[in-house]
Image (spheres, rainbow, N blue to C red):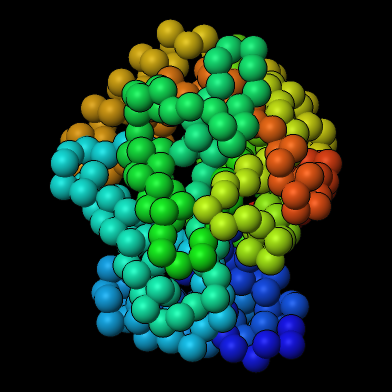
Length: 330
């Protein structure tokens, strides 16, 4: 890159942010990351980068992080689908909404050229049955009643109306390496274990190689239109079809067990109860039990048309994801 000014990545210790920071480093950018407690982004191992230690809602730390930057890539977020109480819900809003507001305010004050806000397709929600959602799909209140979707939608609204030049990307269900939390690994890792694989009798998701999503984000900040949102998706697959492809990559043939929506909802309520007892987000709360039987299908036609967004077959992402999980002993 010819411009020597640094670029800031928030959320570089996460899945998308880590892959994004790595791609920027591979391009020769001077990468700066905002992290808490001196955490080191796994995806940046082997690369030189600059660290600013601080919290998203610490205005002084954020101001220091954006100082002198050319671009800001705001990918930090709390990926939480269920909260035990109002205090836990407020903590999600603090990061996803207040943190976004702080980054946008600091970027404007520092004279940053451009900001890329990483949202999610969950902020768009799902289309009517039998249809595929796009950037114009309306938000049906309560359809995806979880704190992640609601807070990210509110944060995206801030970004699209920001005083600083900002573009928004909405990645779908990302698969690939450096899934450190894990994120998609919560769904994929169980496929590599045990003799049974359960799948929802209906419902599906839009699957994308995380590196395609990163390429779309880099194109959006260079060629996207200010204030616009771009869906970064890939193949729309039923969960049964996704699991079949993942199992083929793994070379496994376990017993497949269809799961009804009624059974999933009962399980979700039981998990909710354990969550209230422990105060922690359960593995399969009722919000996910409801969402699992919806068609989370999205069109990336706008990103393909305006950004030259790539569409790689999902098998490569699955191979690289499972290889990384094995290497990381997950």
